[in-house]
Image (cartoon, rainbow, N blue to C red; front, side):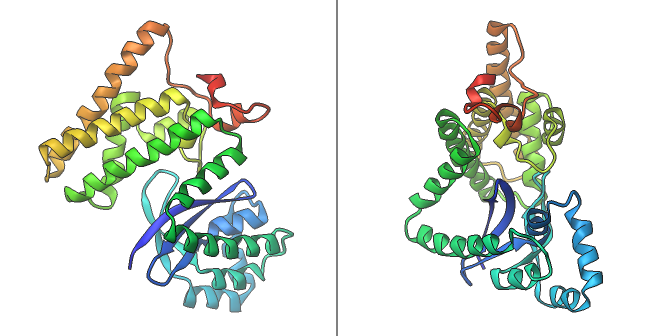
Length: 279
């Protein structure tokens, strides 16, 4: 079974999904969907109460909805209660929300769009660009973000080739981030006041560029040295991060200020239309 994790956007809210290429089905994070439809501050608690209140629904979820690996806000992969489109229809019936019908239509469109994208991969890129534009990001930032996604994929492919598994991806990412920024991923998110939001989606152009340099450097070093032990991967991650750290230090000396920004997307996208305003 081949699965790929993706973040989808509905009504400016993010929903974690996994595409199963064998069954050609989307699996949706149930708690994310509950959060979107109810605007609850604690969708996990809301879902628990739903299952207790509606015994048949609780039994249906327990019997039919699997636990699927999805990425948490900290970048870790954790098993999350998930449902296919048809299963989500049953769950949505128990949620009184004016968003229910639009959400059903959105799920149906996702399935159709994904099948089209499998025939033409360029459509996936076009969709990402559309989503970022709708959220208010500048064209320069979008181009840089897409390049960052490509570089990240090259790094994770290299790690996979070198035997890196599961939690080790987040561990190595933390090392790279710490080396160039001075903060681990969670610390960086706290610095920006982020919770479930993506750190990369809240970086400035300069922060994105430094992160890309760190990950691209780690990839190049790994491809040259072919590490196969975790200690070797750690060493490569540190050296890749140090390349970006040196660039950051040089830039900050020229600017006379830090390029690590506490701003997050909501700080500059509201009432503005360009991330460049805070660079």
